[in-house]
Length: 159
Image 1 (spheres, one colour):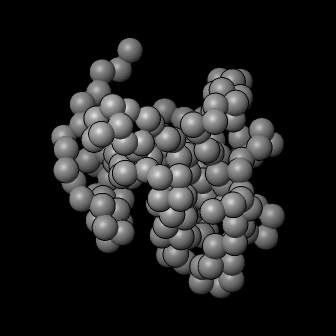
Image 2 (tube, rainbow, N blue to C red; image 1 turned 180 degrees about the horizontal axis):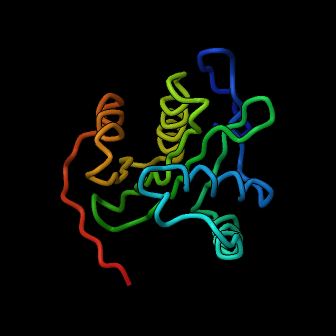
């Protein structure tokens, strides 16, 4: 699905487009407004701008924002991961889905994830995966309503 894309939500439509460097402060604000992000996000924008440059330059990465009336209302990152497993399948990884408080309960999260799944399908991905922290019980229910199933126990090693 080409960007920009119009996503129907309650109260009108939002525009989903590729993020720009100018969107970084708003994206960081969405990340910091999250229950877990409040303890780890925000502050100096320099590392976020460096990360944005790397993401934006990588053709396997797609960072998007949803805008409503000119303001960033939501964001997500979609990564395409080639691999040998599953007969050389490409996986799509959805990360950092955030919707601003003023735009919740209008279907924006559903529309953004639906767009990401359709984009993964369009690019020939065999599956779409995502992770969510176990403490995010509402997020887990949200993804289950969209058809995702908890199939693995994830492991992390912070460096």
